[in-house]
Image (cartoon, rainbow, N blue to C red; front, side, top):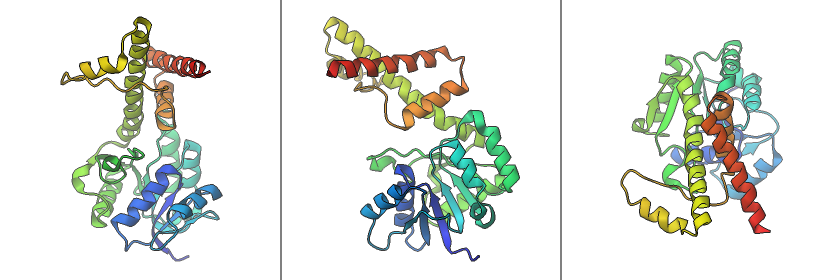
Length: 273
């Protein structure tokens, strides 16, 4: 089967669709395509990118491509994608944007070994922030760690040669560090927000204006108290905080912060009724 596409994005939800769109914007000469098992993902993409020259998103099977960007949600889905015939036999490079469960890194290594990905797989954890154009997909500092030095070199060359990213934004690290860094980044952000939530609760208990106090304290150069809204919710922060606690079950501080966040959400919901 002829390799028809230069790159295919696998998993076209919130992150994958942004990756596919940015690849198209960065280099319109690349033959691109997206793949997602969800018909809804395909429909959402079509609604926002109906007119040419946007690439299409298909649902029937993973298309043959030279380069794949894996943007699926779960570790099981990652391992399933890596076992796919097209990805195994047609890829020259595989960028893994999905957050990897650090406790299952051995499963990833086995998939790499069994699938013959030693010179292909690159850990490239996303730092996508929805609605933040300054920190989108390819215009911010990213960590990149190939499963070996050849994969890293090929990935750097591909991204820069096709004008997808400037080299100054690419920071080469050990693949295990790339995996752990993604989890720690979001867990740390979650801790900051949860601590702010606890400060807000303390302020409320004595009738202090939390927002006024926060603005005042944040005038100090080395303090940045986060906003406290309705709890740490959404997809990435709770997921990665959970992965951190799974990886480090003896970290009692993080385990406690998780419970405090759950209680904050519950109290906030009760106060709405």
